Image 1 (cartoon, rainbow, N blue to C red):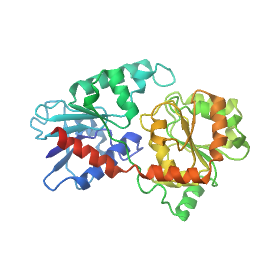
Image 2 (cartoon, helix red, strand yellow):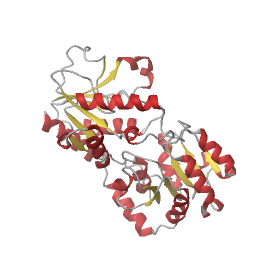
Image 3 (cartoon, rainbow, N blue to C red):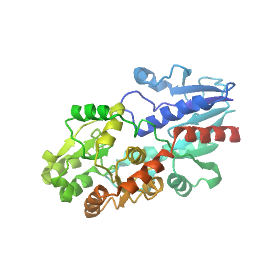
Length: 358
């Protein structure tokens, strides 16, 4: 079978959750494809100017495409768009992955501008209209696709993401080196992701200021400033906790296993996640987790985390202190739970869907 994958969101710089999904899934797919299968990566022609940042594994061919017209005969049986975009090629089975539909669920100005929301709505509608089948990364997002986009449930397939083995297997000396580089001592509270309204970092800072943990542990925010992120900086000033909060900016992916392993607790009360990969990465690292009652977080954590209402500052503050007191037996169970999510399983389910529909 000739398989094409649309990977325009893949990049080697400032990796996001989506780009990590693309690279990890394709790496696992390449290992599982049969000898007679052909796997080709396709980037939009508009990405040519940014080709230096493309992710291009040496063993796989890379091609450009433009709309439905070029290349005129792509010659693939299945084309899979891994980030809500799939080429409208005739004579090819079209699949698309949708990661979340938050922009359709809420009109909260903390999340995005109206222009961005309208753009996303059009993107989703085009994707489901073109696709013969839809993959979602959680049952939560699958339900959203059915209810918010009117897609029959029979067209929607769930493939959970995976956790890389490097999480939970970071040598002590590597942990020490990374923490020393960032000026940290073990036991801090860790958040990873964009400093933004969607990730709820303003309320996280306000909750931290009200928690008992404030007097014992610093809060580490590992992520770049993004939409509505200025409100978080203002919260630091108003709550007078700037001296206790470390703003690391964007952290290279290679440093993340050590940061998780060195944390006393992972705090992730985001407003809505389509999956929530950091929750599992922290669990796999043996770190207690606080996360939200919204989105896919309860589905993915399966009860092995402290869950709080992300809009309730007092609940987040109390939840931080509860997470720090999580029993060792729960932490062990959470780690075992996270290790069940593998990229091999995700790739196997994806490849089986290609063959089933093809």
